Length: 344
Length: 124
Image (cartoon, rainbow over all chains, first blue to last red; front, side):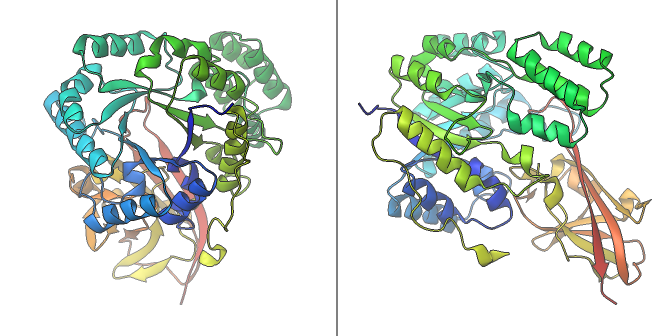
């Protein structure tokens, strides 16, 4: 039986191609739509030049709406940044942070979004102070719960408590599936081997991750094995990543409205070797989730030193995997070339 | 990320009082200019003084000091900025250029410096 969970793409996934001007906004939206991933999430300032410092041209916003309509897509989320370190040597004052979030609420509404994404380092008081403005614009502000943070971390619990106390349903969560990293990603290990980590140490770190050894012990052991520089950096990834349990989302389901389908690699046989999407989808179904899972490809930065990332192929594979897990009968397929190869 | 795409191939040229090349911010988004803490250019092993570096986008040129308090302009995602070095000029031929950018990123618990080195040819 098909699920009520919907598929989408964060255009972050195509960053390697859009950075170089190989894929246009239309290419990104068309490819996603062909794959049946009709929810479109963006990082506002990645997709639209000018935001927030000098504003976005109205023609660019018009074109966005035209493309969304042409490819029968749905705007899902504008991920905003809030650069509270804009001023050298002093943090942006509270009132100015709130005013900045209000501007992003208005920009999200202008793009027809349902949600705006707040980075996890933003204080709960700032979001609570902007909640009424969000309600007025029919927007929900979702804080991204992202590794090394997780649903049992005191910082996230503080957000949850502040959201409940506010009484506003315009505040919620956007979990990033990277926090459920159950195996050390092969693309990470391969990168560390390329930059000089001795194979014995790389094998040890991978195994220690599988055995759930505390990061601090792994770092010390790698030092004692003679590891330096890149070997220590590899061990230190365990400080920032852990195999938290997907079922920890269940307590928060009423406030979870969007999901970052983070992945580092999907293999030819449609498996993400490090993130347990079968378990994740099972938990989301159990929790009655009806929002989008938006692909968020982040393997690019781990392989770009050795090969040109093929973001479209990676997104295609993840969408095939998701469609299958969601019980869809049709296999997502790309029907037209993703972009004009002659560009560079 | 994007480290090896920072310097745009084939972009080295002579300008009045120095040389320039095109550079991109190694990041998945853009940044307001006040958050670019430093741009360091090294040519054939010689670090160029900070005071000699200029940054230009969309017709506006800044010193690195001016960028620190610029709140109304940004280096957009993938945008090719002209990086100018007023060193008196370079000889024609091949030069090894290293371009390093240090950013102040609000959510990161460290201050990243990213660099790219490429051999660029200057036409006679």
